[in-house]
Image (cartoon, rainbow, N blue to C red):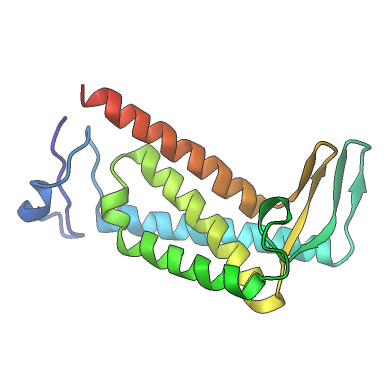
Length: 173
């Protein structure tokens, strides 16, 4: 494994951190973090705009594929139904943990992309829970419970993160 350097916006190396972080040609600097924050905000905005469109009455029905509003007060598959406040507080704690430990969790471009997707999905659904008491799901596939784009961000992000961990383990051999 190669060591990577954490650089400030002025391009100066932080030697203390560069000795503890390892990955192949990956730099986590302020510009990268700022760019990721912008992407995260754009993803949250996209999800919220799509939810607004559906709340205002947009629907679609292609037999096996539907777009219609479903109010979800629980987690996936109806777990913890009617516990939006509990779920919101737990998610806020999880978001805080991920943000505080961001530099420890992110070790490659792929893991960084995964974390941005996970954070965007969690943030957008938490906004729903805190302001409306439920998550606005709207994508229905005949063989799967309703979900939304934020759910997709979390699932894709989690899969990418697992894949990045496998890659890191294989590269360390």
